[in-house]
Image 1: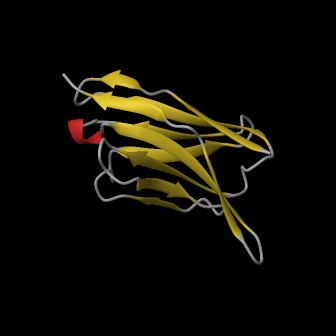
Image 2: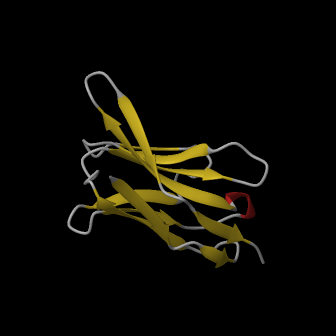
Image 3: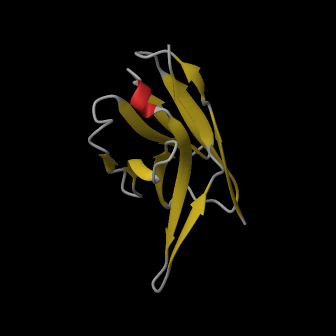
Length: 119
């Protein structure tokens, strides 16, 4: 069984920084594709950043140059460093791992951590 637990959310002023972490316990998903998504109030969940098994990253245009996704195999975590935060970054942030088999794809999600950017 896969458990993903996000941490690091909170209240921050515009221009500030936060670092989110996603801890994996149970079944090891560190060699799956990983991502961070977010969902703002009244909005659909959107991709923020992805990190595949080869180490390639992708970012939403709205966060390029400000957010960085990374991983720590030893700690079984992946993180999202968020700099120069803006009010529009306010959302619940979710980590995701994607297991890809020869005939299936399965998503695993954490329960989310709230980030509020406000003065």
